[in-house]
Image (tube, rainbow, N blue to C red; front, side):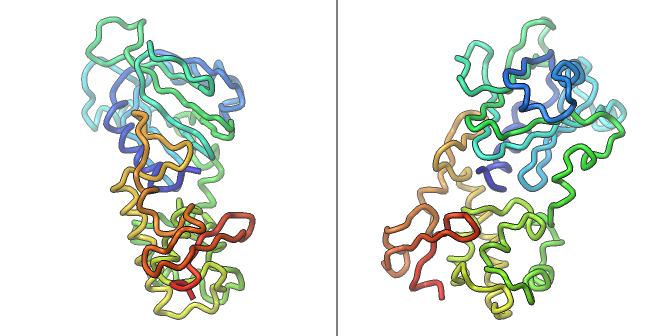
Amino acid sequence: MPELPEVEIVKRGLNQLTLNKQILGGEVLLERTVAHPVSVGDFLGELQGKAIAQWHRRGKYLLAQLYKWDRETPELSKVKQNQDGWLGVHLRMTGQLLWVKPEERLHKHTRVRLFFNHQSTEDKKNPTHELRFVDQRTFGQMWRIAPATEISHIITGLKQLGPEPFSPEFSLEYLSKQLQKRHRPIKTALLDQRTIAGLGNIYADEALFLSGIRPTTLCKDLTEGQVEQLHLAILKVLATSIDAGGTTFSNFLNVQGVNGNYGGVAWVYNRAGQPCRICDTSLAKIKLAGRSTHFCPQCQK
């Protein structure tokens, strides 16, 4: 499943490519991909004639701020005046958002197509680009949120999210308070989106390795020094992965169809049986709360 770095990479690519272009319409090839509104016709109809002012990320959710399109490049004040709700996307396990030319071959797992026309183009009927939502496992979702509607009332998962790792709210004090007295393995706690938004299986394993903590260690047994090392490690592995363009082990691609590179330098994730990059010990793999968990038996005590 794409985690915070991968979704952040997609967000940045979308902000480079899709802003201030008129949405001419679209096509929904799998109706259950549209979570709101119930009618696919309403979903497409409410997007037609809009444009995207900015993409935002919250945890693993992508949120596009929409406005009523006009021919002139909008100033910020004009966008605010014409603000017209949101488009929400969650990639789930295998979702991809790809920015392509209309003539590009249609992937068999394409679920939604949105047709865009560049603002300077005179032809208002023929799209110059498409934003395609490709999703092999079909768990991904899209939402159209009407103006003056609270986003979390429609995308209810947003209400459950903890602080963003790079925000001031995710302080050492916050993490210490969340973990103290908890009788659950630290790996399980890190996967709880109510604790940290966007952290998932890959980067929980990586952060625990860098902090020298075994994934099965109970939260209540962590020392102050270990929590401090873990806090730093979470920020480090996320920043490193973003710089590397995210991780591609199976499905992740950025909006231009390019793989992420972090997988080639991962410390432990997906490297069971291979030698530890620090001590050469064979890396272990176990199941913890139903999730594959990778660690070094020597480096992580």
